[in-house]
Length: 504
Image (cartoon, rainbow, N blue to C red):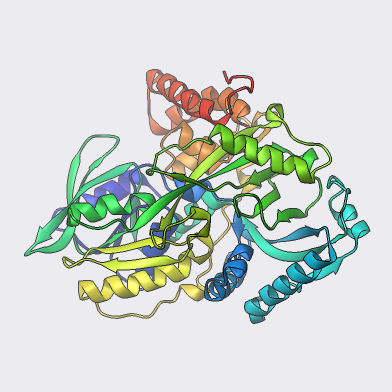
């Protein structure tokens, strides 16, 4: 992955692409990898960084979606569980099983949720991980010693899977290049090209140099998540709204709140969502909320009521109730949900929609990380048909994704560990710049590593060192490094809620 080489390919005179994908999140990267794996000449363009939006701000789970059982959406649960099984098989270094316990407080709950999770097992079929089973009260407390014992009658243990969403995105970007495709981050698409009334490419600008490009293509895929309606209105100003927006927030706490390897799942909170407390990278991620918002934002921040909601619910189930001072970092993501039926966003489906305009723009919207591959397959099938490309079968069901964690190599580089509270090493910053298209401090500390997500204060403290390493690797000036630190510090200030000691 070399950005200069990718830009050179983008600017080659007279070169035409089979498919251009707008958007470098889970959906866009999945579609680009699928297209390239079929032999189509594929280009992906991303306005910010790969997975810089919702795709790096998930609950870090590859799962069937227990709450969709309650909605009766068995087809979505079955599809998700099948895709979970494929990811465990194809990306074992990136996706791993994670045990969960659902606590129960009455005999009725034991029967109701026990039956639901047995159905969950059956829907997984041959791709199941391990059957769910009932636990006694003592077994629950042994697995989660910090759970509140009052009224606890027992629990149900089941398995889903966990991953690092941003690292998965980089693995997909690398796979795209391996398959002969090209991706460019920090490149803003600003409009569509037309030929005889048909969409025939895109126009845009390189965010680093300001150079403008016109890129011809036989087909264009709009995979821009919450911004998909903006792109659709470039094509047709009167396009109706396809998605509505919901914000989900998460808090990150010290591992002492949930030691061990087992996650806690509360099946229904006051807003109808599932609440998770999940061990992740030697920390605990607690969430999520579901709050309607007006539009997609580049850096959404948890609302104060979301922070209070999560703290209050976590305190109902943990012996030591977390407070604001315990929050190491907090983050929010915008979910693009299909705008159907009205009502609370927690009731809207995570199913996807595939829409083709009269001029041939293919839009994929909705969905979730777990089903990114099956969404991509359907999208490329349709895009190839619309663009008149020779039909070729999807092969990503068996496509391996390699882990990127070559820690031994990274940690042998000069400089060593960069901060005592972060598992971040100079070699990882170097690799991010040389091999993974990291172009600034935020790219490194938010996505090539997860420092900002795990400890916002420590991330700010290490930012000057990261800026100096990147300046050396990218040939930037001291002034550039200073500007990067200032911009990152301003960004990170929003990752600690008000009433917590300020960053800096």
